[in-house]
Length: 155
Image (cartoon, rainbow, N blue to C red; front, side, top):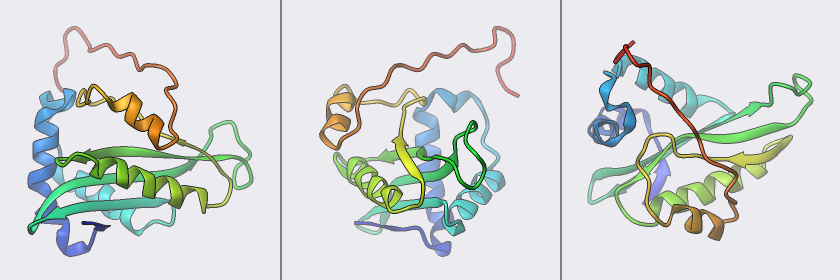
């Protein structure tokens, strides 16, 4: 079941976030949980924020954090805006895509949103991701490149 995050869900969400973090490229960095939950709370309360969770048999099994922002080159308050995700994850096949479809529909209803963008920077990806994204109208738009600092492991 996909639904909006409720305030009482925050601590129930932590084990899932810890699991996601442990699978990601960012696992070498220690999360600051008060900051993580403050960001999630701000997103869930903001008009430009979108937070959904999936729940199965009483357990949190997926999460989607999304937001709308103005393009840096656009006229403030009047120019084009885009919707993007901060995190999409689900333990169950198809739920992440369903949340992404809902996010996309929500974004198109918002003023001046001209583009929905998503990407994978966590290193958690499925082989068929590009094909599945295409099925819901998201087209491959190029890779992401990254380099880790050669001497620093955590900041």
